[in-house]
Amino acid sequence: MSERVQITVARSAGFCPGVKNAIDKVLELSAQRQKTIYTLGPLIHNKQVIETLREKNILAVRSAAEIKEKGAILVIRAHGIPPEEEARIRALDLEVVDATCPLVKRVQENIRLHAAKGYATIIVGDRDHAEVLGLMGYTAGRGYVVSGPEEVAGLPRLDKANIVAQTTQEPEVFQAAAAAARAVAAELNVSDTVCNPTKQRQTETVEFSKNADLVIVVGGKNSANTARLFQICERLARRAVHIEKEDELIPEIFKGARSIFITAGASTPTWMTDKVLDRARELTGRREHPLAEALSFAWKIVITGSLYTALAATALTYVSLKLLGAPVSVNLLLMAGLFAFSLHMANRSA
View (cartoon, rainbow, N blue to C red):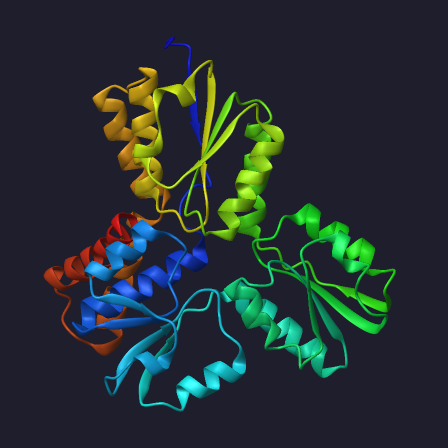
């Protein structure tokens, strides 16, 4: 293939903050407690990552009833759960750790506050998605789920309604649904709860897909946000493929492609995107110089926050020692920084 092939990787590719926070929590618990960690449902919608977590004794269960160990650790995943379910599991002999994405928690609280004021809730999202099932639990029994503006017309007439979005919804779909909802609600409160990382990811995808011969979307086939990215790319790019692993790429996919864009869902780790990039370069004859690859890797460590986190952990340890009047140990400072750094690097390789 010609040397004129250009491959661009999305700046937004990699775990979103909510998923990264959940992964960090379970890895930290696993390192500290040296025991089986259970998650309520798959931590993220990515088979390869789930398999890697399983190897680290981090196991997914469908319900708390599957856990037979007393005092076992159960992690609520980033999608969140209904309040009734959370109350039930907290009443059990389990150590419950909440890894719900803070942005999902914001939507939960938004719904709860409006429901308390008598508002019905319209959720624009996938009705079977874990996040939406959790959000429905905050609607006080007055919740409706629509996938888009087409389904809004089928709703009953509502006196007061609060319309929100699944955090990974397409912004345009939410806005269209909100506009349609004005015809069914006498009073409508519009709460745009699409999270900023999703908006940034989708905006970048739209920008690059329009001019790409080929878009490669990396992510789990059961990931809702990855599926949405793929739908966007199918509409805009000349050709788009959705893959989970780099070995799904074959030479025929790249036929006639001179401009290639690689993007990924919120539950796709950076290392998977890197493998896809390497495979794409191999099949198109575009290999970077070893020095360029080394510099690129070093920059990724800085830009993804690993180095900043390590420095912050070191600084926090130093301040804590000074406040306690304890002697400052260089070895202790190094251990704190390296521990934080290793967690972030483990996150990249998990």
